[in-house]
Length: 154
Length: 154
Image: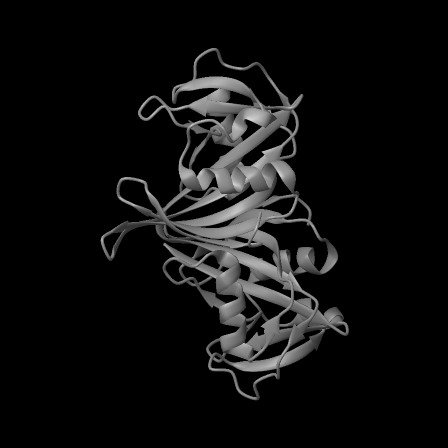
């Protein structure tokens, strides 16, 4: 089962985001866990690979299960662990292997084009320091068809 | 990939533990995630099934990757999410489907027979309210051969 981690890095009221080339959607940098890694190792490694930056004291802020359904069948299940950090060291890469890096003002983060479910956790993480748990169910073409969140109104 | 959750329920300076019949080792109650569940749902459901108790406000306290090695090969990889709670409702089952339930004084928890790696996270959870991350590597007969922890001295 695929497991991914990513991190919301917020500094000077901006969040470092990555615009992916395929759909033009924005994400926060991250990537897949490798065998034997723990989630905090993955978060640090992937952030460094994609941005050049070393995160300072990343803290876990959301844990999600994702289901992708092909009709009634579950086609994929994966998990995502999202961290939060307010500082870093290092120099931002001018080009990321995964897309275009951009510091986005906090007030504009939720207005960027993105997977519908991502708004839920980004809103939570930008406004709370508790952990959000949830399950997102998507169709194969990434339409969000069900959301379970705890707490319910992040 | 198998994912399990369990919970340290501590009340009146005692922790509810479960002695498993096979090796006589002690664990804290929990079990496997089902498809589409998020980890907090699993923690609540499994605790209820094994003990009869409903956890109050469980909080995530450790996230681990486990590797089981057959020589140099990785035979299994799984993840474990451990929650912590200080209160519950409901009535304790007199018999659990998984083993014998026992309220163990906090001072005796780490003296019980258990998987070697479990001492690391139980010590952390009984003494800190931060999240511990780590990877435990075992042999097929459950000898602990490597540990990576963050923070390093829980």
